Every structure is written in structure tokens, then in C-alpha cells.
Length: 366
Image 1 (cartoon, one colour):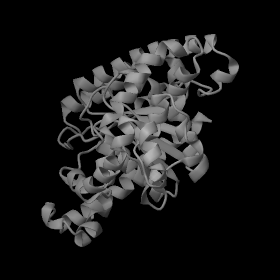
Image 2 (image 1 turned 30 degrees about the horizontal axis):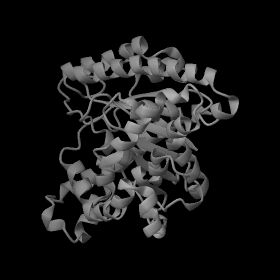
Image 3 (image 1 turned 180 degrees about the vertical axis):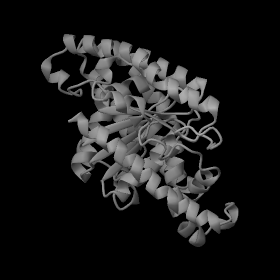
Image 4 (image 1 turned 30 degrees about the vertical axis):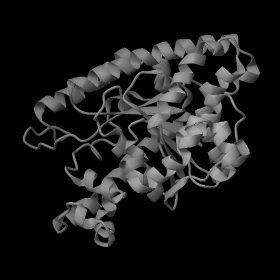
């Protein structure tokens, strides 16, 4: 099982939309996959399930988020239905015993694809991370448990349900929650847009990654080998970048069909990576892979309004034509069909091409 995250310091790059469709592409490839939404904005969750279902999950959890121990005495059956990621982290946040033998079910999205929904209140867990961080250097058990709990949950669910891949969505932040997530997953990649902001985002990520690695290396040198084993054996590896949601423009005859200014930014990305992401954090990438977006231009160009329709129907873009026709709320969704049906269906191959290119890189993680 490999744990992969999407991460960019720059927001609005389509990260959650790409993560959602990556999960569905892996499903099409027969890869048992779990998606976990650790972005407080919950965009990945909203792509996967409708707001009424999400509201029901959150409403059932409200008392547990306020006081887990008290609420559990009143409602011990809460574990029988799907829960949010904050609920799953709450016992660690409150310093209570974990429920590893009572893992709630996940939300099924397709045959080989499940979801653990996000929750807006995840900032409370992030606050505990900040409070306990320094304790990890002294080997404090609760501090280490707090830092490693997300990875431990991934391992527990993989063991229970046989997941081959777990995809974690993150917020556009360099805060302590993302420091913990990125530093304890196996690999991550950066969805980017062809603009100045993405260049600076990659630079910020590289500089932060170097600092985070030093912090974790220091922590590892101070704690016992038993406690060290709770962390991944190797620090996270950068898997590359991809350009997403860019406007297609064929007039300049460049290899990615982008406007001249956009293409120039894409050409600058590899040098920014080389300069700011240390070799130790990208040692699995060949020079060719470092220079190329993952999957080339497979998912590079914008889908226009299709992602919003996809979100409204809670399905990947390539399933829009079929799902729309039978959807009870289709009158509330703007979709014209016709030639758009084939345009939607053609995206399936593009996302599968992207997924295969990513899996080739993930396979090097060992």
C-alpha cells in the first residue's frame, strides 16, 4: 500500500478535482483505492457525496467533536456508519484510547473506490499538533501518536479493506497539519497552473520540505527505535508536477498547446524544482521525468464547465452523460448534452493515461 498526497502552496489549481478524478481513474484500472479529505474546505468530499449525506454524517458527529468521551457513552453505535476524518482523529486529539478494533466503514463511491469525508472542524486537531509538537522530541507518547495517527489510520484501513493506494487531499497551506501529512506519506505531487504563482508555490514547498526533513531527522535521532518505527522508514519523495486546468491554445505551435506566456512558465518549472527541492527528496525521478509534467498533456487542458457538472452529479466527468439522464435533480444542473456527451466520455482515457504515468513513478517508492 502506498500513501500519496496532492499538495500545492497555491490554491485554486484544481487539486481536489484532479484528486477526485485520479481516484476514479485508479478505480477504472481495478486498483483498490481510498481517498481521504484533509483539506478543511472539503472540496474532495463535495465532489464525492451530496451535501445532504455529508450534513447527516457531520450532524451525527457534532456531540463527539465537542466531547468524545461523553458522547460515546450516549451513542456507542456511532462506529457502525461512515465517519469524517476529524471524528477518526478525535480520540487522539482528546488523549483517549483509540478504537483500532472498531474502525467505521468508509463511504463507497465505486467498486474499488472509497472515501473518508473531510470536516471543517479539522483545525482543532491541527491546534493539538501545534501544542504537542515539541513533546515529540522528548519521546512523549501522546505527541508521537498525534503526529503519526493519520498514517496509522491509513495502515489500519489498508489492512482491513485491502487498499493498494490511499490518496490524501490537503489544503493550500504550509502549516503544521500539512507538514505532518506531507512528511509522513510515501510520495506527493504538485498540481500547478502555468503562471508565476505556481512557480512561487513550488519554491515555497521545496524550501519548507528541506526544513521539515531536518526537523524530522532531529526528532528521529532523539527518540527510541520503537518510537521511530511508527514513522515511515524514509522521508517523503517528490513524484513530480502536472499542469492542470490550463486553457488550450494551438496558435503558437508548442508541444503543450498553450499560450506563449503559459508555455514559458511551464518551461521554467523544472529549474525551480532543481533549485528548491533537494535531490534527496526527489531521488527517484529521472532527469526526463523531472522535466515533464506527469502524463504529459493528458489532463493539462481545461474541461470548461464539466467539473462543476461533475461535482453537482457526484460522478467523474466521463460518467456525466449517463448519470445526468437519471439524476433526480438534473433540472437544477446546467448540462446541454449532445456533442458534450462525447467530449465528457473522452476524458476517461486522459485521466487513465495520467494515472498510469503517476503509478509508474509511485512504483519506484518500493
